[in-house]
Image (cartoon, rainbow, N blue to C red; front, side, top):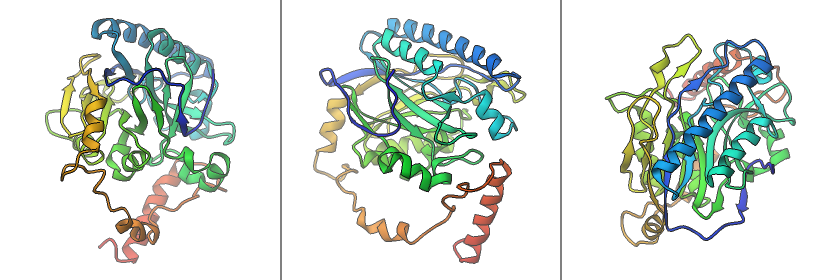
Length: 357
């Protein structure tokens, strides 16, 4: 199976589709936290993938052959580390870039003729002893054609923490990857990064039309920041957001339904096309109208939020500002307490500079 990291300009495309259906598949997350060995965790992951494969096949039969994109939730494979060290979690729960798990997921994409997106913890041989949180896209031939490594995280390493080495290995094109396919120009945004306008905007600047958003978030009757952000990111970038939330996390000590429900598709006008409630569900599927979004992006008027961007206005403000330090783990031993200390230091610096009062 072909493996890539980052940006791939062209994919061997079939005939471009004017419209198709996408599915944010809401599935429960089975935690591997209480497993004691890599082998035990791998067995759980394999079981999860097989179950998801059956759910995708059955869902597509219901939705129809025009279902061409399926997005899985964040944590669908392992849940998240509950106090475990970075090195232990990397060994137990992070998968290899050419691992069996990707092979099994590739078979699902191939068997169902879909693009499959999700989010996993992943080991990179260039950075031993750690992991990255990686959003991926697998094409209908079963190949991983896009990897996006989460850039903003509270308690996990990101490329920004080892920035110089990461850029030396992968280059800037790997930071905000976009792939051109027959179902549109696809990109990924991970979890809470939907709250960071710059992340989705940087993908849109490369032409992204459909954002695959794997999440595991609180859902309820009151609009959450993430729910608001999904609509905002879709509107301001004139792009579809296909957002899959988990149907609860099982096998951990936190209440299972804390992150359950609200998978949705938002169109390029910021309108929610479909949304599901709690529990495992394929009910949030909807139509992605590529012809419509492309017409809208070329329409002259106040609503064209892409064509009206004056990016030079903001360049100096960003270039002259530094909040969270880059390369903070380039030459340091990795410990989760580092991230808390870094945020405390950042707040102190911003306060001293008069940015925070």
